[in-house]
Image (tube, rainbow, N blue to C red; front, top):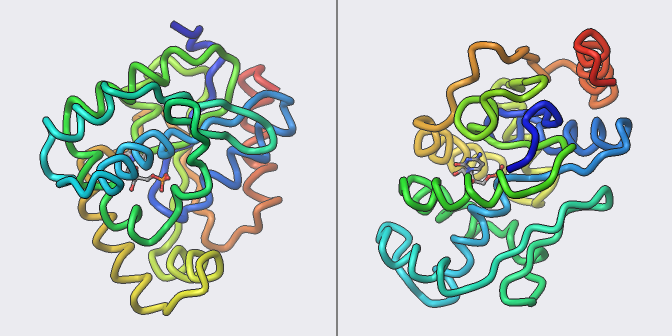
Length: 215
Ligand code: C5P
């Protein structure tokens, strides 16, 4: 298992800015960035490819355990392979967004993802929902990013060229479904990114890290 002292966690809801911030902070520190959501997304993809039911835990687990899934962290962007096939580019579709929360709700799926993440050698910056609470409770530094729902919806529309109302509805639905695993760690530093630029958030994180001796 990796040394938790080497891990920096950045949690928060969809489009709170956590992956952009985590990637930039990792770049500044010269260490890899890991997006934990990719593992849930790959589980959703395997179910979708097999025309399976994301609500059926046993079926999701059968697909996961029958394959070799590797998360390859890199400063240029993580890659995800399934039995050697690079599936990274298919993981951020509207269909996966819509089904991933149902897959991520299953305790055995969460345990499988947690195990994969704890195998990754540190140091790294990792983003997700429960990185600072469940997966790396002993992390060196923890952050929790938020932003008002309308700001998050506008950011996502920019990324996906979609209709604002539809995106806002889908995001609210995903927030509701993800609520169980999205509570902030009690010792996380909260940053509301709504009125801040990416540079400003990154510098707040870097300032906080220099205070704990990680930067
Ligand atoms: O962060 P990202 O949007 O890629 O996460 C996709 C989905 O994976 C989330 O909506 C959530 O259902 C699930 N997830 C989770 N716990 C994490 C990371 C992601 O449940 N730590």
